[in-house]
Image (cartoon, rainbow, N blue to C red; front, side):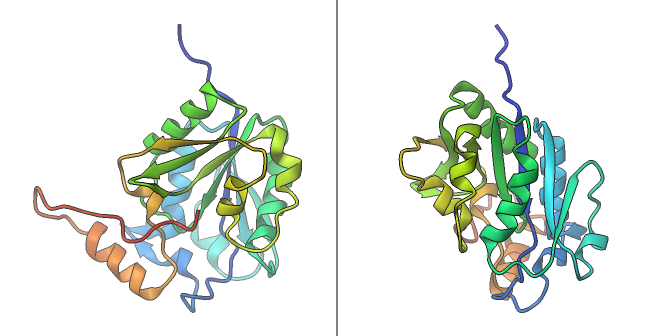
Length: 216
């Protein structure tokens, strides 16, 4: 019997100020496209019911990314990450059984990994779903609809970590072998390491480890 796929909306957070980078990191090139474009492409190709993309109202990022097929939310100067999250969740929660929250600076995410998490949620849609690798928790995470209102109370930054820590919510960790959920870009050094490790062909058999843990 074929497993029913839950109706999960993807929510990509991409309106932050990139304060640690000192410039708009999401428009930096990676594999021939802006960093953010890689995340948008993965979300659109996955088994998500729809994709909500939160972008800054000002600046060039909204023009640098192909957001066709996405429900775009524009926000001006959010004081923290949670402000972007709440703006997006208010749009994403309609008719959704769950919401997959993605950071826009994880360009190694792919549809296969996102589908693995969606399938896990479809098995236990009352649980929070998060990826794990060698004890390291990453992102994205999927929040069940019954917790949307509680999630709307989150403030500050590190949204994924705060979602996973909501009191009373059962967290299911799903083992993921690829580096996508565990590699993000916050600083110039991390961007350069991303390029060195993942942006060019590597010799057969060479090992590639996550550049750094995601801010889950």
